[in-house]
Image (cartoon, rainbow, N blue to C red; front, side, top):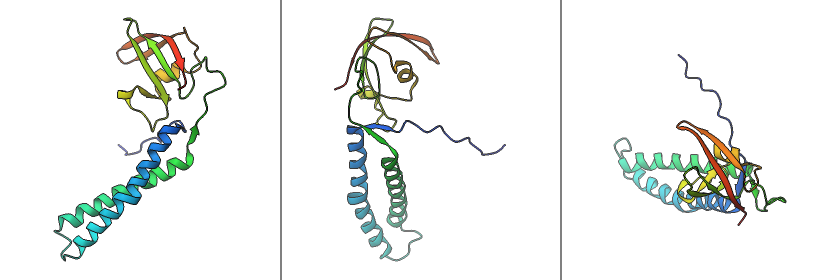
Length: 165
């Protein structure tokens, strides 16, 4: 048995303006605020002497590694993503950044926004452009029926409205 894992399929390289702003704010918070504080606490803990049993030093170094890892990821991700700031020319169809109102088989309506994989937030209705629902919605006009296969079975939805706020 090997430990080989096939490489993951990369997610979409698109992001909304709000998503880019959130990633930049997180990067700034980590690099300019948290990292200097943690570095200071690690240097103070190191000055106390024995580092092998110094919990402040050990956990501070671990936190620094976590911060550095996230900063590297965010910097790389911000360089490779494309910010979508304009609505598409054909706003009568579903594309990236669209707010879509759907009606399910029970007659309940749901509102979702198609966003990049860095912005997913189910509580706000933000779904990834790479998700099965978003893939089924892409390019569909208002009053379309879509069928989505899930582990619990197939579900049918009706597109009620599309807007790009």
